[in-house]
Length: 162
Image (cartoon, rainbow, N blue to C red; front, side):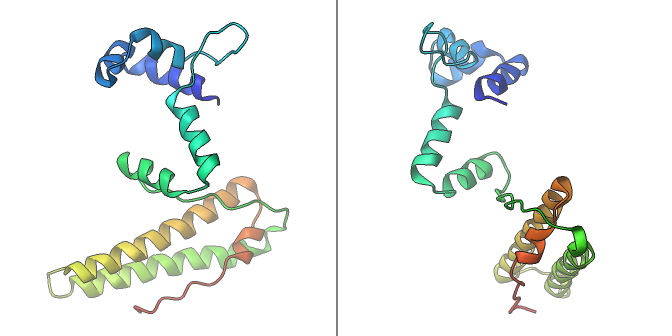
């Protein structure tokens, strides 16, 4: 999907007039963002999504994406690179996700044993949660692609807090 197409869909739900007011921009500028940028006809305008994309390509710094995800209440996890492979790694990969989840539960149980979770314990819980999300996202992406080579190539995780 192109950025202008996404913005057009967004503006079907969010009022372009309100977006213009919130951003201190003209309504015509907001509408131009939802049109393809066409150097020949002059319609459309470089929209914020295209500019973010250009900034990412220029800097190659994924902290920009992470910041945007955090502002949206989420977390960025890079999709694995896809290689052609046979799904022989499916069972070990499934076991790894189950182990990651068990590790998270162990950290939570240890932290909650005294009915109090300290800042250090909260940090450990967050770290285990992030590792589980990464492992699971990698697995789901490989399922979607029907390719599990990336799971085999991933280095084993080391958990010193166990």
